Length: 162
Image: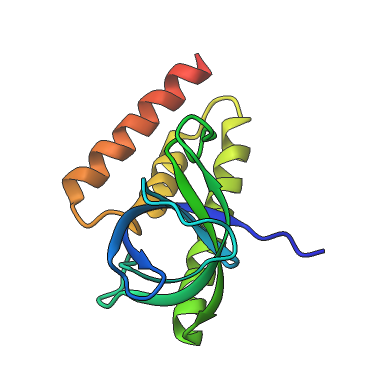
């Protein structure tokens, strides 16, 4: 059985059953679907249309999907804290599908290497910094935001290594 990887991503998502008239936040995306954090929940089996910006793209990704599960307030997990819906993609432009695939694969490889590097002693901070920059440069449009995120991650890594 093929394992579907997911990658965290933060962006606004427009969605709705007929038109994209509601707004939520994308918290996680994978080849199979997307988790949309929102107060407006549709029950499972409802078909919806989605439109969301994607890092490195000038136009929104447009897709259709079906709601497969909902999380109400307080039911969330560490990754998906707020209420929202898991939506399985049912229809998408092949070009958009490839963009999502490449993003998820790159994020997965980088995160696996970071986990390996964290097991080393001493911690190779130069490589960790390079990987964090590569990982987050996809998600950030502002260099200042990117640098702040990388600095925060490096500080956290240093603290956790002791």
